[in-house]
Image (cartoon, rainbow, N blue to C red; front, side, top):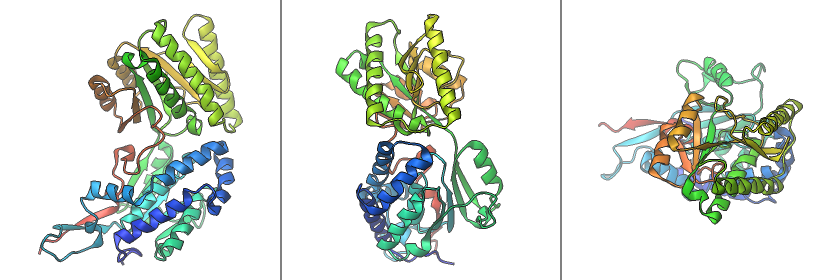
Length: 409
């Protein structure tokens, strides 16, 4: 059976999505205003952080960005409009995989919207498991206002795994899920043999600052500001937060000491621009305990702590035997002699990396980041701002939602 968008020209679909996203890019757009407090209540993030997340999400969904992403993966837009009978037409065309279910994660704001958008561009029928704030439901309503066919093609609903009305994953042609590794395993087990499953589990992001970078005071200040923003946004949750920072040099070097001061000051500034959210009691206790332990080590002459204990902190030279803390606004800073030392730390703790911020694209730092498994290299301050066409988790945006059809006749 054809999908609801099967006969709608791709450019019309893309234009409708971009127009809906443009409306959501307006901070005064009524549906956006209505969900703002609900998102803050669900995530515990402060309102400035939620506003930033919505801006970053919807600003990226332009017609040009979507079309560029599709061309980049599929070669052209025409392959998604079915059989084309002309001499210069592609020898293959694309058909939607069919029905797609997307399961949102608890933390990242609007994480299901990008895969849903590309599944719709692939002309699939889409069902999204929405969160309590109903952001996806509200955005899909705007899509329906832009193009009637979205009324049949795009649906969002909330359910728990034990709900009687929860959809069966085995009924879908493809399932995309975000969440913990245990949650993904449970979802995969409920998919049928014919269901294509794609899971996005827990990952981390890292940063590397070279000697040359901290040797330039203005450049070091810019890097510090970017790193601080990468840390505080979304309470350091999610795979794009800065979880560990490597700095070339020795902590008692004048340039390194100055950089730590700049980083601490930038963290204080970032905390003003993006105030801390509301932590649950358990996470708050864990954070305070980790900060007290770091302060105790520093008092004994091992490492140092910068920042406001219990709120945000730079833990300098934490034990190499320990993985990153993965706590809100808490960053471990490791001084290293070379990229190889950073690579050894990442290997020792088997950290699956999403992104790596580099202060400069030096050949050895790039090689280290790639060999460590990072799927995106970027500048400090840009970790939390991936491009719409970026391959999240190293996977394509749209190619997984189509089947190639050969015109072999």
